[in-house]
Length: 62
Image: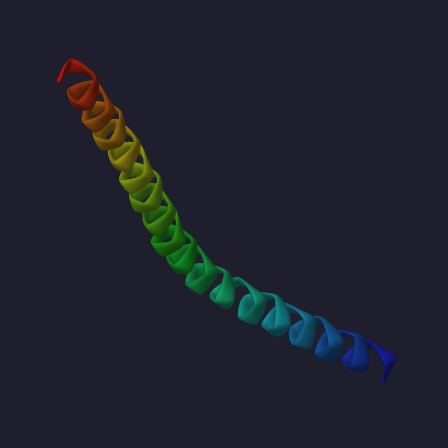
């Protein structure tokens, strides 16, 4: 009787572990999206900084 319970608990534990792994795949998908967003934001900030510096240099030349 106890062996059956232990086997059932092990099976349930394995099922829970499998379910826990599946959401991680969704998280990694979102991590990739957020990583791209952060990368794009950084690139935009960098571009804006460069453009502002160029604008300042043009003003100084005049």
